[in-house]
Amino acid sequence: MHVELQGVSKQYRTGDDREVRALDNVSLHIGEAEFVCLLGPSGCGKSTLLKLMAGIERPSAGSVRFAGKPVNGASTERGYVFQEYALFPWLTVDGNIRFGLELKGISRKRQQEAVERYLELLGLKQAARLYPKELSGGMSQRVAIARALILQPKLLLMDEPFAALDAILRRKLQEEVARLWRQENITFVLVTHDVEEAIYLADRIIVMSPGPGRIKEEVAVRLPRPRVRTEAGFVALRNRLLELLHDGEDAADLGQSEANGSLRPGEASEQHAAEAFLA
Image (cartoon, rainbow, N blue to C red; front, top):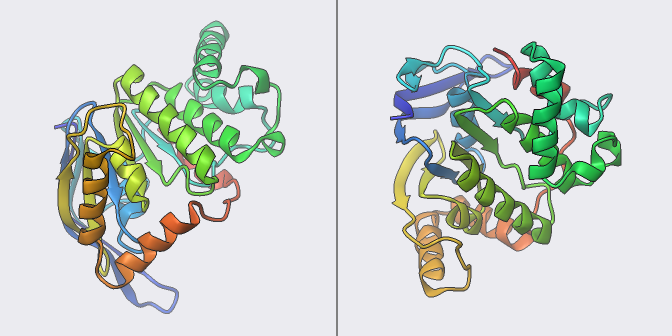
């Protein structure tokens, strides 16, 4: 197994010294080159689970292993794309994408070859000299994806990367990610609360429930690719997932997210950007 979590729990202490359990006894196996979506309402521990796989957080109990080895910290083998882009505002698109290569001490020639490849791959060649403040939300997220991919991770972790985008752009980037996954042949794990997004992208959907976060059900997506959202199989699976999530606040949360199509845009986080490149 590429990623293995066994009996993982995670607890936090609040400012008033109360203990909050974000995850409880989660076990999950993810195969090499598989595309898995973690689906559920706010507060079900999806992002916490992703951070544990990345090594940004450590479990309170249980174990997290990647490629057979314990995950004890962040690594460039496991790329991370944040919801709020996390671009460095003082660097151009080119500079943001090459940032991790510079940290690794890669030669300038190899840096340039790699940057040019990913600028082309993500449709960013015309924006190479622009700064983050000059970019649209969709273009910013493409830069964040390119910056993660250029380090050639074996696992790419994405935390609601399209949540701040409008519905049309969101679909376009979903198509881009599906194409990149097929082309790069790496393992993808994506956090979402959007049912259609999960069905469109995933080989397998992990449905989670809150209070504390647990796996409610694992659902295989056996629809042929590329997937068409109006086909009967897609609609039937969408209805099944909504039924699984139709438990009070679960249904209200997901129903509202689908009606809105997007969330408020996040702001760049320099701290998160730095965490993504810890070795």
